[in-house]
Image 1 (tube, helix red, strand yellow):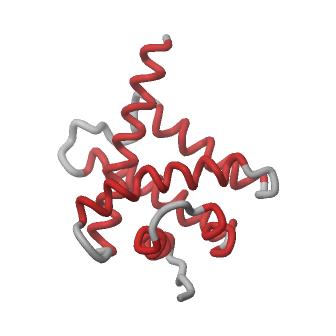
Image 2 (cartoon, rainbow, N blue to C red):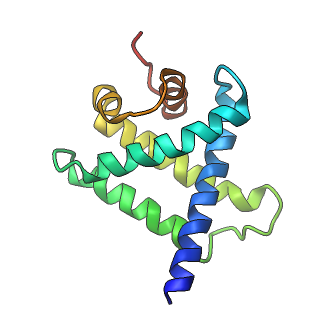
Image 3 (cartoon, one colour):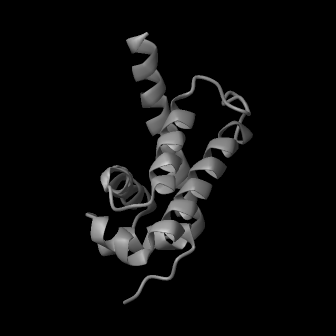
Length: 135
C-alpha cells in the first residue's frame, strides 16, 4: 500500500516536471531551457506547498492544489501514459489549468510573496499562468 502510494507520488512529480518542461518550451525563458526547467520545478513545488499551507488563502485554492496532487498521484489517467505524446497531454492540461486558476485566484502579489526562486523563474511562471509581472 505505502509502496504504491510512494510510486504514485514519484510518478506525479515526474509528470509535473514534464508538464513544466512543455510549458517552458512554449514560453521560452531566458537562458538554457534544461537549466531553467531543473531550477523551476523545486521552486514551483515550494510555491504550491507554501500557498496551500497559507491559511489566509481561500479554501478553494487549497482544495484545488490538493486535488491536483491527488490527480497526479492516481495510478491511472484519463488518457494512458504509454501512448506517445498524447498520453501526457491530459496531465499537462490539468497542471497548467490548475496553475493558472490558482495564480489568478491568489494574485500576483501573493505569488511573489511566496516565490523563493529566481526572477527569471517567476517571469516564466507568470507567462505560463497568463499573468503580467511587474518590473
